[in-house]
Length: 312
Image (cartoon, rainbow, N blue to C red; front, side, top):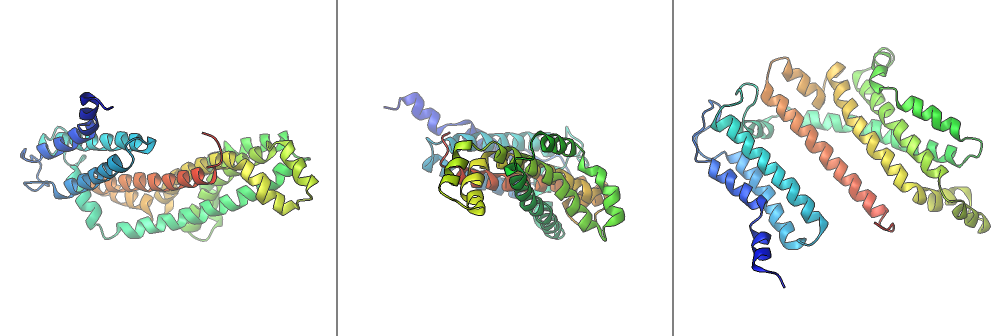
């Protein structure tokens, strides 16, 4: 039976208190020139959408781990928004030119006509490089992992090559490849391939011998054994490499676009940094963070689905 104290804690949480605090900040006069008087419309719409998500999870998944995680994330977002508003629009403790308020940033993010094209360009470049590394890394790691002739030598070689920062390949890529988009794709491929290849090799090499012996006894063919036995048993290691490769890919994507790109979110940040447009710089940083979070979330969901047979 739930106590009165427990009932109170369930409905009066830090998330709700922080959301109310955001509304209480709105009547305080703005002291920055770029913020209109009254309610910060874009900021509060965004906060309200996030709060609705919190309420849905509160009703549908209160006793599940996903709600606990979501509550912590949403509370952190509300706390950051409240401090950001307080230190910028309401008090100007932070320099307005360098640290625009969330309302100015969100307004720019929504109205920026150039941003969608740059985001799409980055996603296409990321997809080409990462998916190529994914296919070749898993295939190469699987084939060599199954070979008895290769062992420690492959481990040492991949460790050596994996430790070389992919950014050092950019000068050669610029000299050899026809355009900057192919340079970015190549750098992303190099940053993703070795973690995926290495993790796949380790995973396949570590498949228990009894599984392989059982498949041989049943006369399971090479490709069937690979798809139905070896890869499922190696998925945990493979996903470790996939996640590492994805993290490196985003770092190298923005770096390559900032160094020599002509489009993409990295170029977007670099271009407006030349003009000291810190509003758009913050927009670019936020967009990168949102994209990474969404893609990482989707990969984690795929991993949990494919490994649902494993005990937690």
